[in-house]
Image 1 (tube, protein in one colour):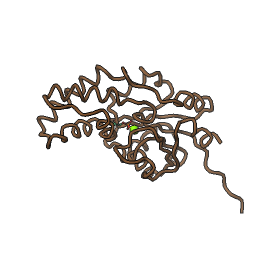
Image 2 (cartoon, rainbow, N blue to C red):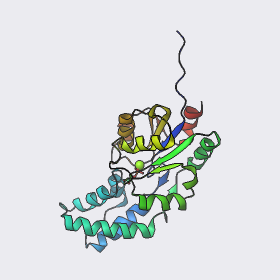
Image 3 (cartoon, protein in one colour):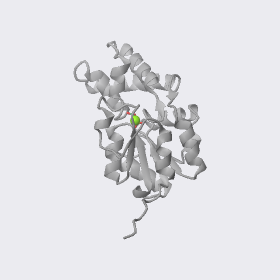
Image 4 (cartoon, rainbow, N blue to C red):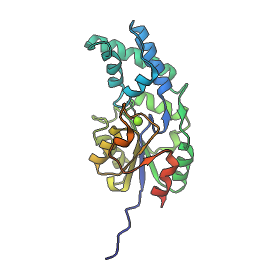
Length: 225
Ligand SMILES: O=C(O)COP(=O)(O)O
Ligand SMILES: [Mg+2]
């Protein structure tokens, strides 16, 4: 019996923090300033790295919870401080990972549609993509507050596919954490994970996915054939 070739990948959905951009220096600086403003001890950058993944409110809550539970009033003050400080530094010390621009260029040249699907709030995503020179690659950006749910819920990925005009089976997710892997599985699309990102303290090779990448350029043969 003839084998059917795998369906062509028509669209790639990229996670942002830890996949395209090493944004931890700025996230950590904003958390540091927030904690000082609240009169609390700041965390090491490696601790902040393990707190990133489930969006801004969880990052702030995780910072405060290190020192006992956070009241709603504490959270409100902390979130306001974080937003102000992150807006000041967003992108200043953030770096593009090796392989990102060559991979995005190659996919654009071959007509593969691309979306950025991040748990980062909209207010920070657009300015950061623009500052890092990435905005023009993405036909669609879905941020942590674009739809009601965030990754690991599949809704942001489904929303991106709907806006791109592709089915989940025609799309591929590339991310760095279990949030990306679980969202893709639930949406019914394949998922590759980079090994250099943030995975909330979990070893990335313990996360169920369709393959690991040490650079985004390694995904090109799988996407373009
Ligand atoms: O905002 C976060 O917690 C992580 O963002 P990401 O989904 O781009 O990794
Ligand atoms: Mg990420």
